Amino acid sequence: MTDAPQTPITQDVMTIPRKQPGGKPNIVGLTREALRQALIDMGTPEKQARMRVNQVWQWIYHWGVRDFSQMTNLARDYRGKLTETFRIDLPEMVSKQVSADGTRKYLMRIAGGHEVETVYIPEADRGTLCISSQVGCTLTCSFCHTGTQRLVRNLSADEIVGQIMVARDDLGEWPVPGAPKREERLLSNIVLMGMGEPLYNFDNVRDAMKIAMDGEGISLSRRRITLSTSGVVPEIARCAEEIGCLLAVSFHATTDEVRDRLVPINKRWNIETLLTALRDYPRLSNSERITFEYVMLKDVNDSDADARRLVKLISGIPAKINLIPFNEWPGAPYERSDWSRIESFADIVHKAGYASPIRTPRGEDIMAACGQLKSATERERKSRARIAAEIAAESGLQ
Ligand code: SAH
Ligand code: SF4
Image (cartoon, rainbow, N blue to C red):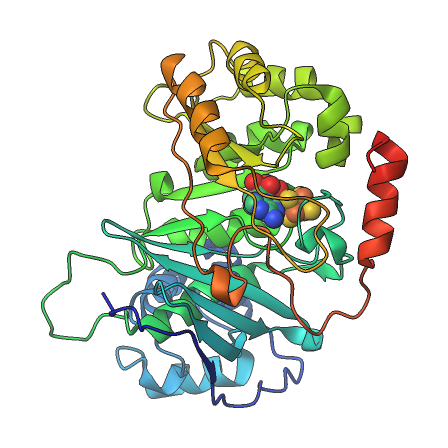
């Protein structure tokens, strides 16, 4: 694992200009079935199609090859046809910042000139990539920086899996032919906790995660992928059924009155409705517990009474409570709870029998921590005053 530098560094990354699409579809992001059909449409005999899918798939997702001419187990003519028919396109890395703690924040440009952020967090036993699913977010959680940015669009499957591939480029993690297989992986876990609400872009997120999990490519286990939702109740079960990854829920409050203010989707699907969906979650078990994320906001949701209400609400659900000290961002209308308050809260949850890790803020010096993500190019923002006014209007706060 790379040693953490002592001071944050910002680095502009030289990139090859994005290829002009020119009408050719991107081969990255196609599901196996879609790729098979596309190869048949290109003239591949049906009988060979499955084998060709395997070959192309391995070049792209196992070896990280970006040029059809390097796919040496395919006939020269066939490589030519692939080049004529498809492009191999990934998000373009615009900049990379490395935090003093080793966290890397990448700014990636996607079609239309939009930018999304992807964060790599190295830890002793794993390396987690936090990926984005949308440019901006339609939801407006009042403590989240991304929530102040209007949704621009959903990311496509290639833009979602592409974030993983670009991060692997940066980490130098594609296998080298002939070299012994590395057991340790720098990028071992994925969390869908970047910009956007993944369950509002379900199909693309699912297709991208299926590619990331495929054993002949990036090959991440489904248990190493966690999808975080603010509580889009009708889509929750599909996460288990169609992706099979782990689930995290942005819970953040123990009464509807407070959750309405913090996570406004609560007005549509309230705490009780959300908990019913979680109790019914298809894959729920002790080994696949649901993570309840709980941001610690001073004097808003951090009392001992909140902690006691929380454990009562979730009783019977195999769960882990992830306490997230609030990460501040310019103009944020909240403060982080005091450390002693967070510990006292954690203690109550822990004594009730739940793991209650306090998430160490990572990459704060480069604004890479949870909820701090927002690309600099998005112009339409709510002002600090507007956020404060909205919250005050809804809650009677100062
Ligand atoms: N939209 C999804 C996933 C992205 S947010 C969701 O809301 O779950 C990932 C996590 O970071 C969520 O739990 C979110 O509530 C939390 N978060 C957002 N802003 C934060 C902030 N400023 N400080 C700490 N956590 C924050
Ligand atoms: Fe969107 Fe999640 Fe931020 Fe809420 S917390 S605004 S759902 S990204």
